[in-house]
Image (cartoon, rainbow, N blue to C red):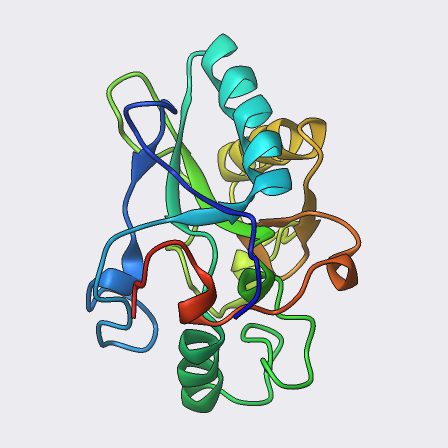
Length: 187
């Protein structure tokens, strides 16, 4: 067991919305992977998220989080369902930033908690889901750039294939973690 430095995101302490897709069947695998709808991040990613929450709030928006730390076991299930792609990292040989607790999947919502139009659903494996896709309307590109600005200002990097995915730099500074390394089991 590794000391993980994972922090549980508590909506009573951080003004975000949690919609943990992998605790439901509403995800690309089509089956529930997590047994609990809990989101955790490495403390460094959590501190960056706090900055992002503050920036979004100043502009009248809120962050809606789909996923954060993803146990090695969950990443393996996902990779086995969709191997050899740009969308699901191999937990054995890939960077696997979610498995390190330094990646987050999220979107922006307005003051009525309606998601901004990002052009595709979360977990879409289409080219139109790429950050810089010009296959989307100008309004969608503007919304993606708004999210990009908030997240990069807070210290995250973007992943070019997924508009919803952000991660801390220097992933190899963080170990890959298993479910039993977390403060609470979600598998």
